[in-house]
Length: 129
Length: 344
Image 1 (cartoon, rainbow over the protein chains, first blue to last red):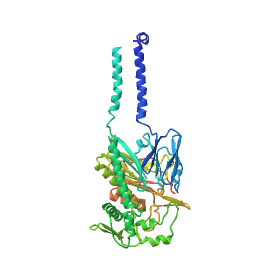
Image 2: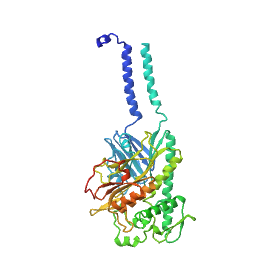
Image 3: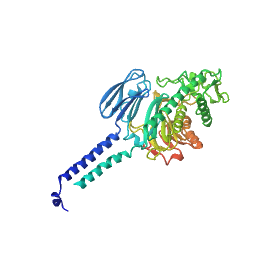
Image 4: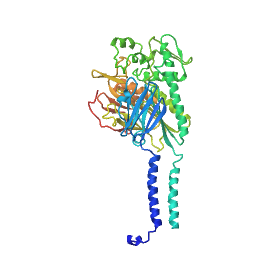
């Protein structure tokens, strides 16, 4: 059957079916993306309790209250860092930007981690050292 | 028309079916908390989020309980009580503290004193945040207080006694591994079939991941080329533990010299032969303490001790050369090319 022969035989139902199938496959893709987020969350814990869950792809700065005072966490261009901290040694600030893993501020009991399902988890499950 | 409609219904009906078979499937649930003055991460394989959360909270609780018993820096711990009563009287302790001190003495003996839990009298002299190097006289005065042979254990009475006044037990080189082991014990007795616990760099893996593969652990590069390429090697762990001692974990550099927390019990100064040592064995209490011992001994003697004990090991020596024990050579995957003269 050639394309020219087919032309007259396509009914409106065929067109509807085609669009429906397309819509289903596209929505399926979106659905899968939502069900399995790809390394996108920044989770902030204070003293072991989760206080924030933020998307890594949205620029934002948040103030997190720890036992010593306020720690400032900045998310920008898919990276996260601590910009201000009341801790004595400022190791958390010196760590700079991260895309995966975690920044831990022990004195102010704050953990900022990137919940990466995309890369980190697939290569290694943990790091020693 | 009708046929097409039926076909459409058939296609549509496949989608929910595709997702419904995911329900009840095993997943990895990950949770992190600050405990033992470090970050503790627990990965649990379970088909129920509720069960995973419950088991994780029990394991975290156990680590916190252990920490309260054996914290070197907390006055309320059993360990501090032992140290305060050094040269005075024996102190009654819980079975866990007793267990851990006994384990630490075994490792001290096996390593010829390279790992010594009584290093506390020296380690308090060092302050790595304030970048203070203790005076030679202060160190030499306290060296006689460092010997595991002066820990007197009375199993019947469940007491620990330090023979000399001023002696101090510091379990910093073994406690995190012990905690990882205890956490795995708690998880397995809670019905969890696979998990991985990391107490800082002390990791114990148990069972297999949902995909049937062993847990993959990366070893941190002691001198990474960049912040993102920071893994030296990776290896699979199946019902095994791994720990790493490195000169980059707690350190400062003064006048071009690196001073770090891995102190030689007979000199009181940082050991110079290695950049990092990773040890692989069946328990984290072993890997944690032997990583310290091997670091103190240096690459040659350390390698011999590992081979003698039958443990796996990866040593990065002072020059950045990587040494791997025979048993794990075929399992480990090196992630960075060998570099020479990359010390400092």
